[in-house]
Image 1 (cartoon, helix red, strand yellow):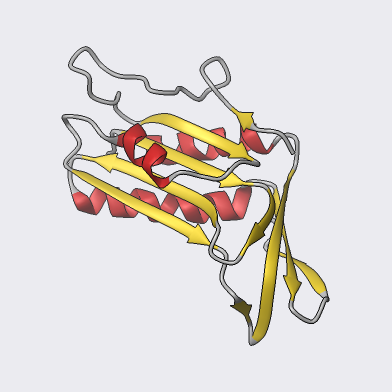
Image 2 (cartoon, one colour; image 1 turned 180 degrees about the horizontal axis):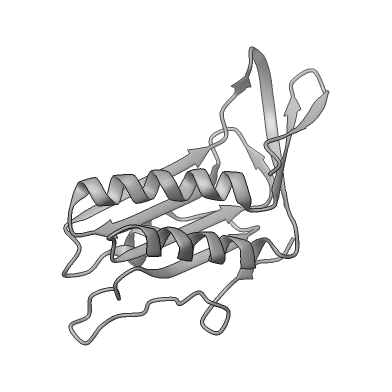
Length: 164
């Protein structure tokens, strides 16, 4: 699947800053679903600014087991509307919490053990708000964005899991 990157005009704004260079209040500054490797630093940079006193990050990686079974790799597939949905979910979380900026990227395609599957970052004035919004954002992305995960086990079998 090719990169799906939602930008201004579709409800998501990338790098929006106020006159002082701070991320605009409650803005989604990055939202992307892509086949390329994800960058924690990209999400961290997206939510930092002079008014940000706390950044909370969540990084989801591919683990080598699930429910007692050895996992060899994962494959993520996204619905064509997943980009619009990730933007909608991120905007909802940004509006629901007293935060300055949110960013979320999710990977598609075949991933190996240890690869980064999703990165969520939230910049806020204080840590409590950053942690709460970060947790809310990853939970809502997993619950609402149409991305499907196929686990491939070391015995050659596979299963689809976690589809919203």
